[in-house]
Length: 424
Image (cartoon, rainbow, N blue to C red; front, side, top):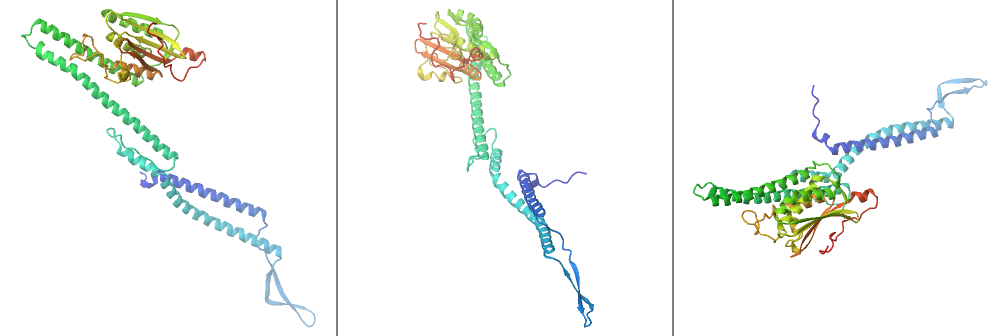
């Protein structure tokens, strides 16, 4: 047979706290009363009264004693009377103790229910607010008042978590909108060229060739954008296993991957890779971060100029730096270049995603992804730039080699350009 369902109030935390509080109070009261009773029973002499029956006699004239029927009484000495009084007192104490326990139990239930309700009132507000929150509206806050106790701390912690979730959801929505906007342009370019030229049988071979080149650039742009999105998603998923990484080897691999691209623009790739600096991370993602910096430098560097890649260690921080001789970045734009889909004023977008020199200006995700990768490894990505001279992007990471030698490191990476002066 199924058990009868308990009332809803009996399954609440308030009911459990009330019962627990009541049980503890009654138990404490019972222990105190029992201790008092035992102490009294051990320290005083108490036993029931056992009186002696005394009969009355009268003496006749001849000197004989005669029993007077019905004339008798109970008698006891003073000590027996005292023990009897003590015994009766203990009996009454025991009886009143049981009554006091029953009254205490009822009072503790009432008091416990009231106190538990007052104590759990902030939890009720937290629950009510949580019910009103959904994934599309995270602006609600609990806003707990009162003393800074544990429940206030819990409410404030939940408010802070909601704030972080709200920022994260807003960033994701903005990200999706930005991606949609970035994909809309190359899709429109492809569609326009297909409908206007490639699908037109009367178009000339030169027109078809030009349209094909535009479509190819647009699809390349979409491909790079999707690769950057995939890299971001994979890093966020935590699907990689971190190991000790030789930063000089990472930089050398990235250089090898970009030599053909640099040669196509007649650029000279120079290496200054010091062996030894080691970071703890995922080699593939660090390689992609360095590759994004190199791709950015190669894209913007003037034809025939030099792109320098270096690696080293300073103040307990390992670094990889990429320097170009490009147009540079104005000081007021140096932080904005790390925002998604933001490009500097050193090149304007054409309809096919290329700058005025015919070179692709990128997806706007390279530098943000590089910074995200570096920061997820406990490091920092900074830029040093001068308009008309060039830019240097530096990846700072905690140097594992220094940590193993117990030499310690500064709390933050150095603020200087590890390349030093431009003459170097």
